[in-house]
Length: 390
Image (cartoon, rainbow, N blue to C red; front, side, top):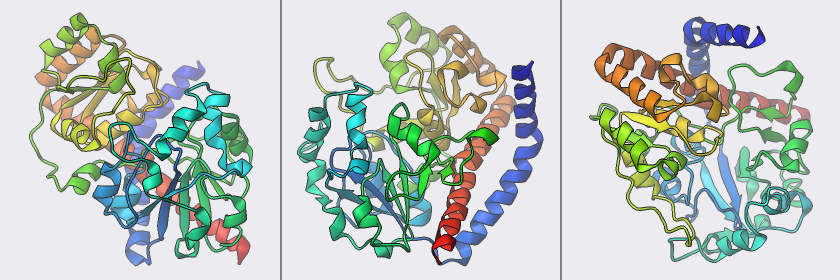
């Protein structure tokens, strides 16, 4: 009964509430951005971080986002707020050692794997250390907001800048640092960015320091803006989600390819070698030219790749039970097997009005949940933090 009521509430939100609340929120956000001055924002990572950007200070929005080793991350901070990006040297302060929990608690990779990123990023002739400086050497007072992936700046430094609001993601949500952060911010920090982007936030989980702020802060068209592409480009074919692409057997790929051709991602790295992801520019080219994005098979995921695909203009299809964001799916885009995915695609190919309706709704959802609402909530929460220090 509760599940059925939840589905009805979600359907009502999408059909009736979303157009109203999204329009109001978009208007308020635009007013804030237009009235200025806009918040000065820095995005920060440590030199042991095996994700996000690797570039020199002062890089453009496109240069920054396209320099990523793996994920596109909070790209809208660069396209809308002209955020700066900095790499800092890892510190021994307890709050700056979250990255170690990826091994000590999650058993991802040994610590040496992450430490190696200081000197060498796989597939590149440099490491994060080429751009890293001591956190204490940066004048953080030039920023209104500092957002780090894991806590990158120690409390002994943040206390020197009381006018700056300090925000952070905990990259791995399975760690004890993430669980502690849901209850209170870690030392020297003000706002915890939970990575979640649910339509409804349960009252029992709300805390003043938590902001539902996705790791992929995206909106439809952000990558077109970033790369200078028109929104109305021709689309065709299906782009397979990373884990799906590696997991599907040849027969399954054939089933999908008979519906519409598959985007050719090129050869994968040999299993015995460190994986070198497709350069983000090539990845985005594929998404911006593809009509569909499919997650069918492979391990369960948070859902960031789906957000990214919708922001790039694809219609996303897959199994809601494999995502932490099942609310992005409709019955027309839900499929638990490659055979069902192929059926969904054929239905969309036969009914262009259905395709246009569903893809518009997906785009409206991420515009609101993955850009407008979280950015507004961050601005409001930062204002509350500053008011307590006045």
